[in-house]
Image (tube, rainbow, N blue to C red; front, side, top):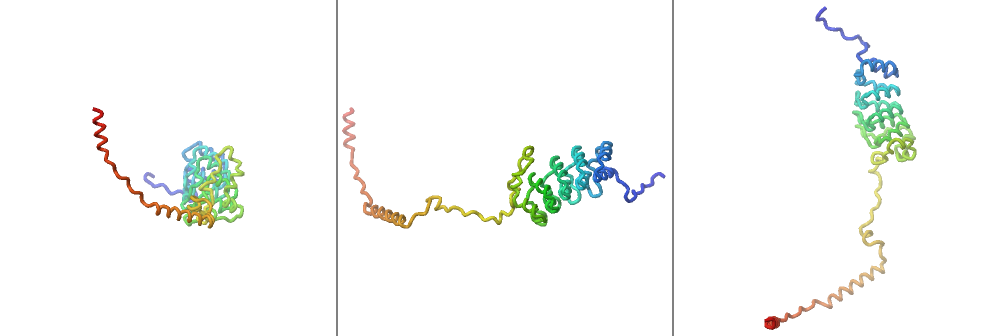
Length: 260
């Protein structure tokens, strides 16, 4: 009958592109490829929680699916609820290979959620040692704080993870990927963050810089004695009298007369 409004979809009915999300979550690469090639625009489609197929592949550890999606221009930085990106899901679950794929495809290693959680926060919180190591090698900041003021080290539950966070420079010695990637940035972002508690080295005094080693008491007395002698000599000599001016006008006149 014309003009009749459509009935709402029954509860649980699939919305457009939901099949792609289901395939991504289940690791059904063949099914996902079939859906994608029939309609490539659905690759970044969102579900009811604003998640893309890549989010679900990252969460469930579906490496082949994640690889396919990234190679077909899936948005690696897409934000779901609470600004969770695929790298946050993968780090939270400890899926190292997917973290590798995401960073290689352009994901930000220091991207944060709405709560200020970085991928490193999630990896540390889950005690995923290898993911922690990899993220630090890739430049993850140890100093980033959440909205609650927590740094990654504040979420540590594992002694090995704590050791890595307190001595990140040790990773550079065993970095097997240095031949194909840039060396780890063990710098301002990767050093210990407790800089406020580090005691400053004693500064060299200006006297030591200018005069060198301290002099002995005997040498100091000799210096004072020499100074007194110089002062006394200056007093005895006193001001020198000025020389009297001599008139030379008669010499000038004589010279002038001889010239003519």
